[in-house]
Amino acid sequence: MAIIVNLDVMLAKRKIKSKELAAIIGITTTNLSILKSGKAKAVRFSTLAAICKALDCQPSDILEYVAD
Amino acid sequence: MKKLNLLKNIIDFLWIISVIGIPIALFSIPAIFFIHDVSQIPFKVIGQEIKPINFPIRMLIIFMLLASLILFYCIYLFKKILHYFQQLNFFDAFVYLTMNKLGLLIIIFAFLHTLPSFIYELLYSNKIKVVFGYTSFLLVFALGLFFMVLSEVFKKAGQLKQENDLTI
Image 1 (cartoon, rainbow over the protein chains, first blue to last red):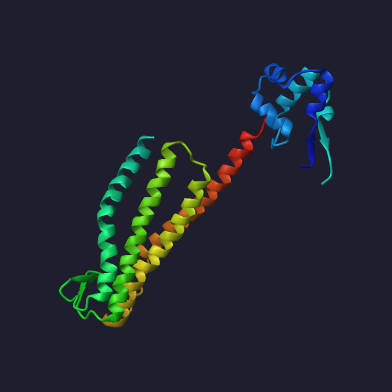
Image 2: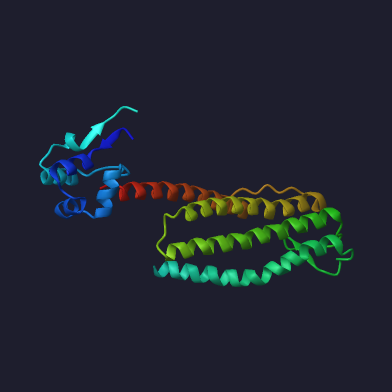
């Protein structure tokens, strides 16, 4: 897929565990895992905003476009 | 879900009746081929009893029996689809694949059921009727196509559901 999710990198930088982030933003760990693995088909703005707020970052820090 | 339960009960009832008909049809196919004197058994095509039971007529009867076997199988497949619906598995791959198969079988049934009576009329009654309007062939054919279209719709709906499930 052309969009790469760099959530793992940001989690490592902020030293936050996936479980903690899932609890903060109010989604299940399964869904967060789907997002991290790049299997997600789409991300809601509300989820993206919650992630950015929790990790104190910009959407560009999490999402990256790579040409196929 | 009351309507679904009612439909399932009706189809279950039809299936129970079909279970009785399946061995009869299965036995009749070789019997018609190998028993020489079948003139004692009354066969009817489009409401008329057929008397000269020669080879082409035997073939027509076999076609009609095959059509009834296909119909029994269609009832079985429909019963299985309804079972999936009762379990709320509307978008399972089995459902749309079986619907497509069901549609195809209904179309084959429409041809197998109509052609023998048409050929019989053509060969033995020496008359060709052109009927405009609602004929059972057209309705059954349309029903088959409808199931195939419904299969496509369910396939698309399944994809949309999957995309929705994977939207975080």
